[in-house]
Length: 307
Length: 266
Image (cartoon, rainbow over all chains, first blue to last red; front, side):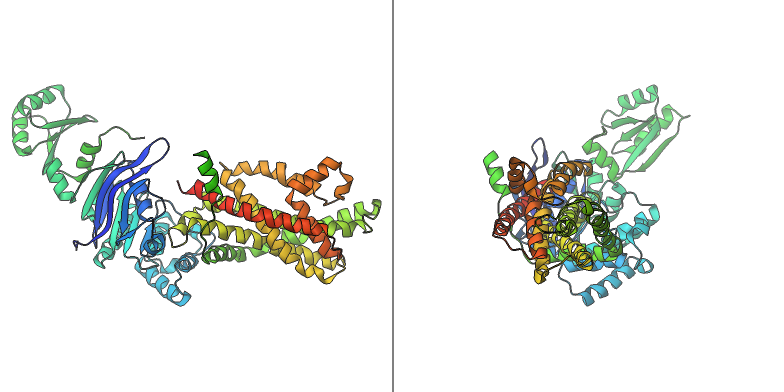
């Protein structure tokens, strides 16, 4: 499980472009063996941070080290120990699945017999054995994703960077990938992932960092964050002016949010609220559900569209 | 700031033998489709030699003591050197960079962006060797080679190809989209195709245009060298062509790598 050894350490990490600041003076640490999730709306700085860790983007200022080595001084050594599964499909469309892995292994100086052995293991692991000799164009989106993950593992990395690993996949393909990510974590691989899916983050991550506007605005265990910002449960009722007024008057400490004709009541005592509510409006229905990471995310980053 | 950005454009890149892994990737793709890549350089010179050499050539007086078909044969070799590397490092590299994201995939490994671009340039030069060797074989089959010096053509193809690759890569670094390559296509490549001593001697042009061609059209120098090596007519002017290529190639090699880095790594 999560150790205390720091594998990646960022101090005052900043990335600036001419007209905006993509990553604004952030500090964070990633511990060996953990699965750490970067959450945030589009443009929050997640991918930029990932690209700095993989030594592809130079830093504007601050320090970033991986396994004690600075990204600006030892990019090759760091890249050797990292596997990257990017957001976009950048497999070689002219090659078969196998050739994609072999050509990639060559970039890491892995001798061909060893590359073949690892490829076969990876095809088995990702259930792609039958697609071994199939041209990339003929693979489905889910298969391409799995192949990109397989390719990211060809150098047996200690750190795996996954940038939105399941975006655009059907539930079956997502669950298969989650399964593989969990099993890699069990094998001791340190995993950093970015995602827009809060259920994915809650499912996979030991720890999440929530980014917005280039800053880390909150971090911690998903369950702790939910408890801290939302509480155990959320009450939802149909919108009605009278209901709204009653709730505001009777529970001034509760946070109310109206969205698509539903009122969400964030309170520490949802059952108390529901009792009062049902007494006042016996004809109306109310649901209590578990609070989740999405509630936290929306509370912290706001509901307005970011783009 | 401006001066610093110009100096950095000419900074010598750090390269290791990893550039060959990039070259090898391009070579592997080429070998998958070699049949398609093989036919244009084989058929095109045949069409030109028949149509222009035999057809048009029957109306043309010998040039510098050479029958017209023999005059244009080295030009066809030179044009294939130019076309194959220039198009490889404009359209080819742009597709790999922009649409296939191949460069992004490679720089996630221990290979640097400088090495990726250098590998692409070497591959462009290799394409020139492959194409020009095929054209050379066609020219030989037409019985147009009069000296064993032709054996040095692949060397001209490599350095000429490297030069055109590097120039092409500078255009690629400036290209906002793939349609952009129409501009260097008809403002640079087409004039060179016609005005570099290819289908008529440079001396037929007005003096000022001759000077312009020698100073600014790289193909002029590749044509001179190829013609010398096919006809066996080694003049001292070939030395100027050698020096011209040797001077221009490293400048564009370094410049294209730095400009591509600037484009891709922000």
